[in-house]
Length: 261
Image 1 (cartoon, rainbow, N blue to C red):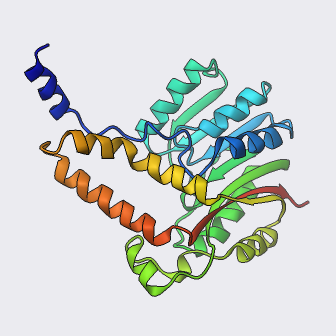
Image 2 (cartoon, helix red, strand yellow; image 1 turned 30 degrees about the vertical axis):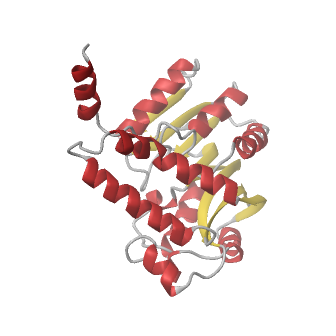
Image 3 (tube, rainbow, N blue to C red; image 1 turned 120 degrees about the vertical axis):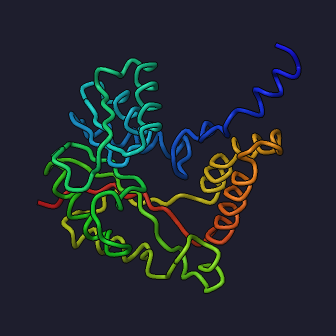
């Protein structure tokens, strides 16, 4: 291949997508290991991952709980294909299924372990923050009485200012999220007890947000004349500005929940 051919191939390539991310969220290796150890220790036989993406956490639970099988549900075919490839590479293809379907009103379950990390919106049609109570009712339906739910949910670490809200996602409002205390009150009202409460720290957020953009940022630096360069630049700059507006304001809680009998 000539230098011209190499340059043409580089120009024609699309921006890579999320290859730097292990998890699709602010989750460190150390926290993931602790979560997997705790969840696998409950001896689950069935795992249901709502809004699974490529299902990295589910696959790690299956590795740690060799008696378990898992089903990941998502609408993103590209992420699901990545999950299937990862399951095959790790010898888990017989125990892990990735299905492209909506989780709203799903007939799957009850499962011994339900994972719902950053995906409570997938369980119903209500708008935030009302969706959270609806999602909790669905999660209680989907988990077995002696099982566990791992719920990852956004919350305000402090009330955002008007200027911060204006820089976040379109239409961002204080009502989009609860604070952590209100989240836990809703959890209890929905028929759970919070076995474990932890929240993503700033290092986890920065690693996630940097990795979320990194592939495309490098691609854009190397391909400024690509037909997709302008829209990629606009998307990256918009997301970075949003991140700077919610950095230190938006949190993510990892709640391990026990169904109350």
